[in-house]
Length: 345
Ligand code: ADP
Ligand code: MG
Image 1 (tube, helix red, strand yellow):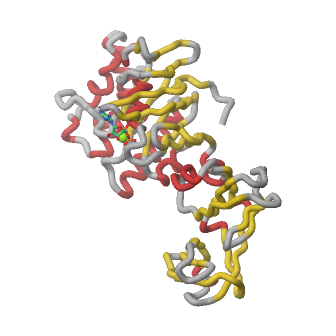
Image 2 (cartoon, rainbow, N blue to C red):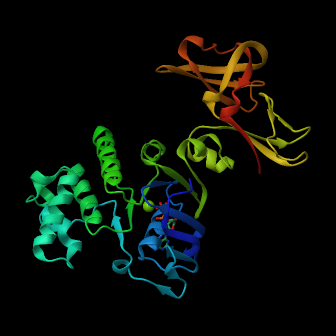
Image 3 (cartoon, rainbow, N blue to C red):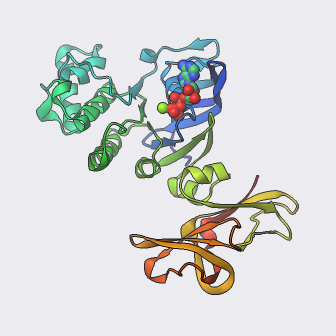
């Protein structure tokens, strides 16, 4: 999603820790008025990338910039307090001996006292906690503490705000409402935000732009629906949901799988390619060469497993419960092109 101005970016950043490469050429842009969700499995380097962007971690190669201004190179790191970057950590890191208002005012030392208080009150109102200004962190619920941490990070009007798994200490409905409120607050503040998560649903709910991280690299970036529907690799497809995968050689512009034939979409003949098909993009019709291995209802949808033969590779299909064939039936598969991609591997 280009267009919006990039306010903070990492470019080809490498960083080894404990002898192992944790960041392996990671690049990301955080844009004005956009929430970028950084989605990746545990250990993929998300927190290290946040620390690099915040100036809390050195880099071995690459650079971090704010516009034209260099913030990190292998030889020099602008310290966190001089970057104009706000950070919200997983555990919030509120000061236990300061009340909510004083926590929010903490980063405003360059303002006169009256202005500090006014700005802190403004931010408390923004996160709908004006009535809790005098409460100490231990008197606040987990969701309220999270909102105070967000208000504190936004108070000095940073160029970008970085949130590392900010909702992971909250459960269920509270997690969803806190997340939705944070999204509203960030939109109202016209912030450039990076939110780290390992939860696909959370990433999709928050993201104007979705960035996928795997093994120390950002492997795909774009609008969430586009990233979901047009994965660049099997790894990218797996990060955003369930996917059926078949690898083979392209012939005559097509990739033939035991399940269906797919247009190779520009991958040249002779190249090895992977078919990536979402379960909701496949439908089954009675009669054919495939066997239904299992068929189970999951609420409104049934999850159906089909295979060319018993013991052969299995693909998953999602179908409305009322239309689901039963185990043992013979079927053939139709694939909706929007939910299928063929990419070179
Ligand atoms: P994520 O936030 O995606 O879970 P991290 O950035 O925390 O990933 O860590 C990525 C990898 O780097 C992990 O395997 C972790 O063990 C390793 N790592 C992180 N920090 C250090 C460190 N200071 N020393 C050694 N290894 C580290
Ligand atoms: Mg982490």
